[in-house]
Image 1 (cartoon, rainbow, N blue to C red):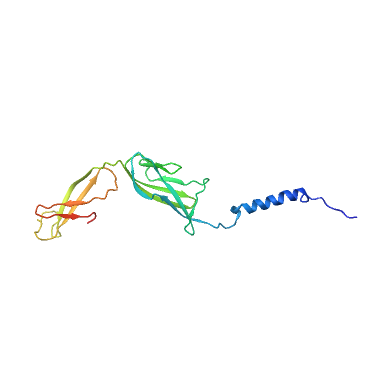
Image 2 (image 1 turned 90 degrees about the vertical axis):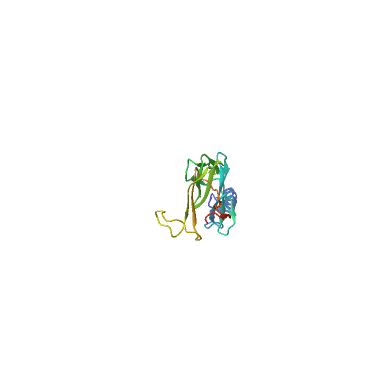
Length: 189
């Protein structure tokens, strides 16, 4: 006499669970032991600039993989935003930069192990610039400024400028001496 065992894997149960499990595993690429794309680079766009006071700006993050190709940021893993000075600006969860005062602010975005930085100047558009100290010096002068300038020798014009708030202005200085002719100095010259 032959005996047959009854197993839960026989019949209906086998025909239902086995195809479902195969379909589940086939559709889940997340179960792979190694990812085919690994995020390696994070950037904030724009990464620098000048923004007007009290006008929100939208920041975005860009993620690239090991091959330099763009990757989508998953909705379930939003970036964590931080600012260097929360009196100047703040960043919302959606990446909106809200400006509150004049000044420079650094923004940092963090996503998993990746970090990106950006730097912005927040200004109201009006900046007062003054030059309270202007010196014309030569190498032959003493530290106490008692030596007169020597005619016909080169001199260095030093202008110490101050302004009432932070800005990203690139200043250009125009100098007109008392004798005929003028000299044009570029920033940093």
